[in-house]
Each structure stands twice: as structure tokens, then as C-alpha cells.
Length: 415
Image (cartoon, rainbow, N blue to C red; front, top):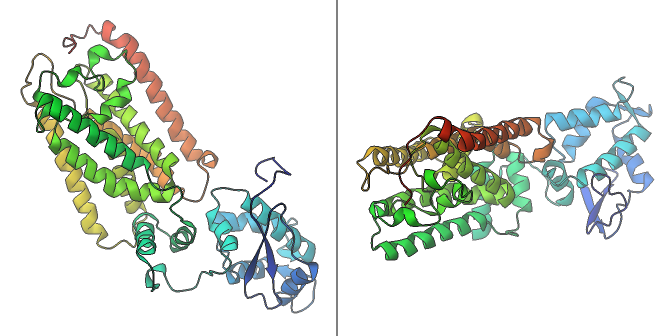
């Protein structure tokens, strides 16, 4: 029943039945259509908020009705509901407006994949949003406590944390970041045994002969702009990236899904290699820092922007620790870049990929993490940053095609 596919069957559709007292929303299920609650039930609920029997209820009372039934909406959604109901802008809602609004808006909301803030209030009718916080709930199992912990780590609003806690099922499990990390470890161990060294593998003459790292002489091999993230200069490089990637990436994937987090990660990796090709034209690049820094910087920016709403424990200390880890890893990369290379004239790997990842995280990544409920394609700010990112990619591609020859850049020999 989404976006113009009227008549398409839906696996599980709820119907709302409000009792005469208006104290709860009962969830009914069917396999084909979305039935409407009997008319007398709608009338009983309407009469409760129209004690004068005037045939109208005010928009303020309708607002109270929404709050009573736990259907908490953000201000924008609430104003849309009221505007749809109050077609004459007279501040009153008649009975027919009330029924049409309740049923039709419910149907539209059920078809929106990202409208968890209203959808879950209906689908989880047995769980009302009471005054107590999710943190106060007792008797939770280990997996439930983990989901609650992730909710407080990543979501700034209590209502979002409760709906996420109710709806999360570990299906699909957060495998994307885990799979990327396992692949990076496997590649590192393979070259560790092949090169017979685990620390500063980059000092081996065969390190850059792999088909994975980005090298300016081999920039025509387009896969290297992404595959370089699987190679690391040594165990110290891999360990720092892996720690940040797992501690930040897995919880974010549990909340926002593999598609969104994968988008931020891949955009960070690509921006990292392109930034190196534009600003540090003679240097190779390895490591997953572009993707890792995109995720971490987006998360930290989201925490700062929603500081009062974030209820994770020791958030100031943990932010400081995250910044320390990022600074240590970035300092290591800067030191290595200007350390005398083992095989001149080829310089050591560049550190600019870190900065490319940070720029993606502070723009595209922040928009992705802030819009937990809404579809990204419906957010104008997402399209603005995505267009800016696309423009950067196109400019970098043209730079790689023409600038090296026009500027007569002296590149190191191929590995």
C-alpha cells in the first residue's frame, strides 16, 4: 500500500479500535486489507472529547487525544495532522474530519517504512509510552539490555529509544561492519605471513605490489580507490582502526541499518582516496581510516548537537577518549607520511584520507544519523550534501584525468 501501489497485499495490517473510555489502542491484524474500526467506536471516542455535543472538537482537544493514546509525534507531523483535519482553518474538527483523518493518516503512516514514531505506537499497542524511562525497566534479558544500551548510545529522544527497543529483532543482524573488519584482518594476516612482518608492513619492498593499495601511478585501476581500505601499514594501524570501527560502527548499524551505515562508510573511503589524489598527488594510501573517521565524526557530531538528549553514561569522558583515539591514529599517520621512506622516491602513505572521511562524516553522515525516522530521499538536506559530494567526486575524477599531465607532476615509479 506504499506510494501509488494501491491494492498490493500487505502481510500484516493493523486496525485501530478505540474503546468508549479512550484509554488504549487495540491492534487487530489481517492479511489483506486494513479494516476500519466500527463507526460506533469512533463515535464514542469523538463524544468523549465533545461533552457539549456540539458536533465539533477543537484542535487542542485533538492534540490531547493524540497524547492520551501515546501516539507522540514530532511537531512537524503533528502540524500536518492538524492542518489536514482543520481544512477551513477555523480551529475545529467535525466528526467526519476526525474519522477521515484518523483512518487515512493511519493508512499512509503504515506504508512509510521509516515512520517508526507513529507506526510503532500502533503496531506495539500493548506498550504505551508512560512517564518512566526505558532505563528504569527491570527484568530484561542480556540481549534486551544490549539493545537498550545501543539505544541510549545513539538516539537522543526517549520516544525514539522506546520504539527502537520495541521494534528491534536482530533480523537482519549487524553483519556489514563485522564482515568488513574480518576481511581487513584476513588481508592483514595474509600479507603478514607473506611479507614476514606484522609491524610497519609498509617498509617491505613488496607491500605496494599488492593489487589493493592506491598508488598514483596506478590510479587508472579504479578499484584501488576503494580496495585500499583492506590494507594497513602494520598491526598498530589495524588495531586502532578496528577498535573504532567495531565500537562505533556496529551500534550505528544496529540502529540505522546496513544500507545507511554502508553508504556513509563507502563514501568516506572513496572521499579519502580522492582527497589524496588531489592534495597529496605523489603519495599512495592504505587503511580504512576514511570510512572509520566518517562514522566516528558523524556520531560525535550527532552527540554534540543533541547533547542534552543523549543519556549515555560518562558521555564526556567517552567523547574525550574517542577524540584521543582519533588524534593518536591521525598523529601516527602524519608522522609516517613525513618519515624517511624505505624505498625512495616513493613516499610513505598519505594521511589526507583521514580528513576526507571527517568531511563526509560532518556533512552526509550527520544527516543520515539525525534522520532516524524519515526516509533519506525525503530530506532536502540529504540531497544537498549528496549533490555536493557527487560534485566533489566528479571534479576529482577530472582532476585525475587531466591535472597530472597539465601540472607535469613527477610521480614515483610503479611498485
